Length: 352
Image (cartoon, rainbow, N blue to C red; front, side):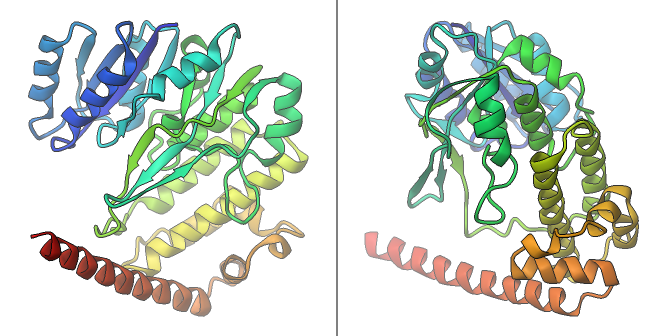
């Protein structure tokens, strides 16, 4: 089977060649690689062109910056493979990544193939395989064995189907049908909107235990910067998901409600962790999806303590305990980063 690897590129100059080299080594002769330069301001556009000149199976798109969702869609429109994978340009893959998907698709008309990933902090790799039994799932098995825990499973908040596109391989024509319903202006949660919609639509899924995707995570970097537009972006995500799940009820709807609580907590964290205000919190709490979620009977009792406290205080529009919890989290995070930085410095000195 031919696979197209779509790699959006924006401001990842230090990592781009490592990513592409790993994809080429793992992919085989019939792999198509599509690099989508999303108006990157660094040297990435030139690197893309040079790599395409060196490798005949690499194609390049240069476009005006429009965000990751639009960049991926541009790559999907150009792709010719029977299946597509979507890879982030600051990550890389190991040797078995594509073979894992090829083996899972043999003899089956599979819409979606699931794999796991390796969380790499530079010193160790934590492997996270899918939680479901490996094998082929038809529509009936998907409905009974995957969808009941797809969005939320124990402990809160854990995903059944991890909502990252890089842990999926999609039949291209199937993904194009799903993607046609996803607005390109989604900024927060675009992977979740696509993955969960695809799982609802899929007639066939294969689950593998591969963990050959390496997600790069640097615990020493301060990545939790204030995002002024997070409330607005999250409201937009809630609107999209509410529309997509409108026909679903029961357990799946309950899972979506828990997802909304988790994402709402992240909005509060964004407001309180940085001593800045977006000016949109009240508007966010008044939005249709959040108001409906806060009015649900029985949801509060299903939540862990910190989320239960936040749930109550969102209703009251007064956040003394939630603020204290988040500020304590920030302090603990700073202490952990300091300890890790010092340990890393000691290790470097010992090696020299």
